[in-house]
Image (cartoon, rainbow, N blue to C red; front, side):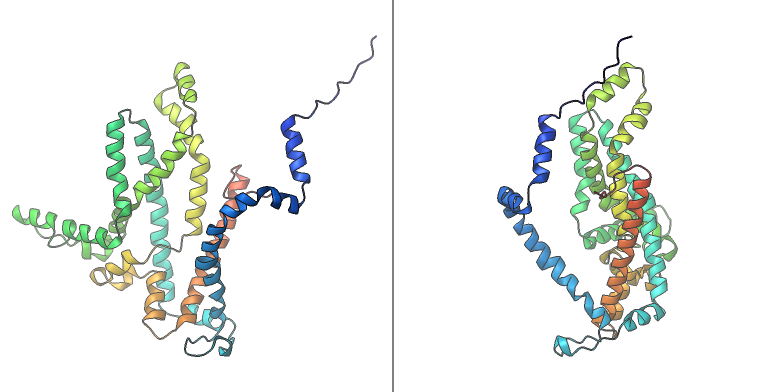
Length: 327
């Protein structure tokens, strides 16, 4: 019987050799080689330093009895006293619950709407219809909240277009814009009109990266349009869906300020009070001071960081890439 011969391991490819040589380079060698690319990042790093890292360093005043009328080094440290005052404030818990209510409504109803609009746009064959639909849906994203609320008042307000139309037929005026019970649905309509187009653009970019030959092969095999969407389209954009979902979860306490502030008098502060308006009225207009507002902002940042880490870990356990991977 002939002796069994073991096959030699395959020779490494040139690409593997280049990667291995690149990994062996020292930091000084990498700097000499990549300095043009690093130079291009300097403006972005400067912007981050001025508008993010330097303001973030001032979070330390959340642990101080800070006053802008005295030198910084003369402000005494008070530990977690401002956080204790924050959690003991009788308006904090209602504002937090309202924030979570609006955030979860946004996440559960607006996020799928953006995906649905992207799928509808992706299925439209006509280029002209697609361009028109995309422009109409995407345009409100550039409107300010002042303009958005004004449009809704002019259309759905008690003296708006729909109310005047109902009065012409013998009906009553609408109280939709001033009804606290319907404000959550009103806020969802405003989100959908203003922000759904932006999410649609992001998912359309993800859909454009799917190889068209996959659809052609599935059609040849007899797959229906629903089968192609379920087995090709949705898996193709699943990494983007997971990424944006994690980012939405991380910013769940950031529901905005202008939308609720502009409708505060019409609906009532008990309905529209969120963390951002709470900080504004307690710290900026009220007597609590900047340390109180900084403590509330730091609380939001810590909760957001924890949620991002947890959501990213869950995504890794489910086999998704998430927003980062461990090296």
